[in-house]
Amino acid sequence: MSFRVVLALWLAVLGVAASPLAGQTLQRDSVSGDFILEFTDIDGVHHRMVVEPRDKISPRMAVAIESSGAGYVYRYALTNEIGPRTQQPIGVVLLPCPGGDPSLSVEPAPGWNASASRTARQPECEFSFRTAWLEPGQSVGDFIVRSAWLPAPASAWVFGRAKIASLPVSFEIVPDTVVEILENIQGSYFNSIGGREVHTLVPARSPVTLDNPSSGLSVIRSDLDRACGELGWITNAGVCRSLEAKLEAAERSLERGNTNSARGQLGAFLQELEAQHGLQPGKHVSDNAYWLLKINVEYVLSRL
Image 1 (cartoon, rainbow, N blue to C red):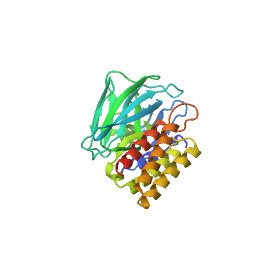
Image 2 (image 1 turned 90 degrees about the vertical axis):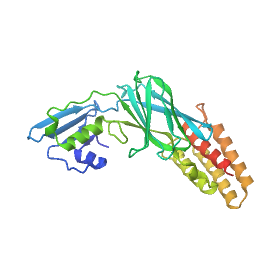
Image 3 (image 1 turned 120 degrees about the horizontal axis):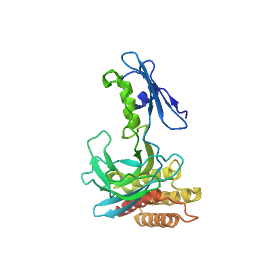
Image 4 (image 1 turned 120 degrees about the vertical axis):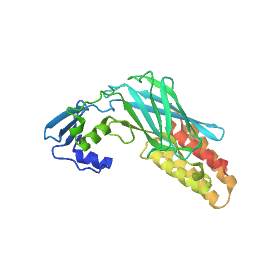
């Protein structure tokens, strides 16, 4: 996709009601990665601004999930990998969180803050810098989310530290559309064009979804399809087919009312998942795929 984008396109993405004014354009410099915003103020004077987005980072997230009483503990580790685009430290991480889970709580990693909002349009768990930015090449662990909800794939948004752009003229004569686009470039919220999206797991699935084992297995098969397809979390087609066959066999057993067979087939599924999980050569199941499928299948097994 071309980096040159007119302001009208961004406004459409944002759902901004105001129409762009003549002379307002937004483009991205393919070398620096900065946005070039041009606009005409209310007095008719044309301006050109260079705006640094908060996405000159290379975030990698890992998660491990453990059972804890009636819920789960999600432990996240974050790395700002060194690379050609890594020019900023990381300072904010946003995870979608379940607004309907009263047990939800968050704990920050050392040197960070944590908060959970259930009232926003997008309920979120936020981790933000307190005393130490995550510089390029650094890692930090133990961002913790506690929830009774089961894991599902989702997008986290990660933001670096950028120099705040200053308006060249008084705020009062800047069109609202310009203010909106500046906030979207340098703000930190979901779907911002100035952040980096990272696929991970979050507590996004109410346990009620899997309380019926038959319909629960259908949900898990959809998870497996995504892990083998668009997400790329399972890297071998043969492993995908073998895991899918075991889920299908368990579904057929439940249709026949044979609960014992379904338990055995789901147990075999978990054994293969365990055998294929890891970083060693010949392993094909990533951490994300492992925890997604393991936790949800174990929950269905507990309902059989």
